[in-house]
Image 1 (cartoon, helix red, strand yellow):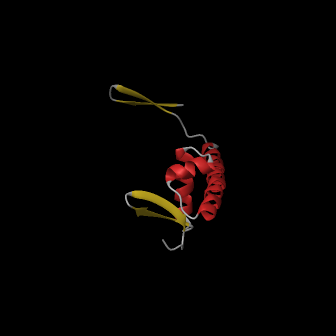
Image 2 (cartoon, helix red, strand yellow; image 1 turned 90 degrees about the vertical axis):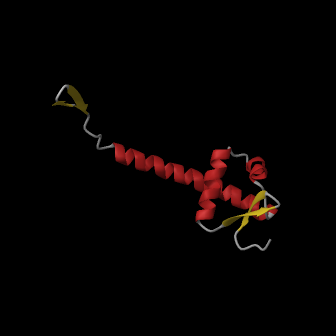
Image 3 (cartoon, helix red, strand yellow; image 1 turned 45 degrees about the horizontal axis):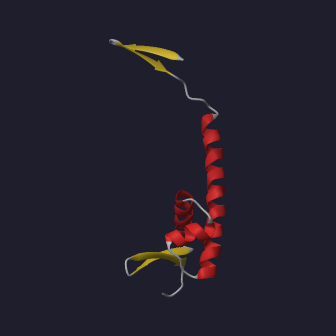
Length: 99
């Protein structure tokens, strides 16, 4: 711990932990693996049912809304799933399927 004095303020500067970036990187890799595992589950459901709402996917996949949102974002990022709207309802379907 390093103390710095600037005028009337005393600051304590804590040097960074060299292991912290590696630990953060490992956690990010684990989270990405978890998201990809959930995205496979979501994709399998969409292939089976061809299109679903967010609420339907939550029930069919048994995921929390956060986990489902991350899985859908991953699938859309990979261009495997697309989102579309019909009569003010949002649906998800595997990419490339006609409405």
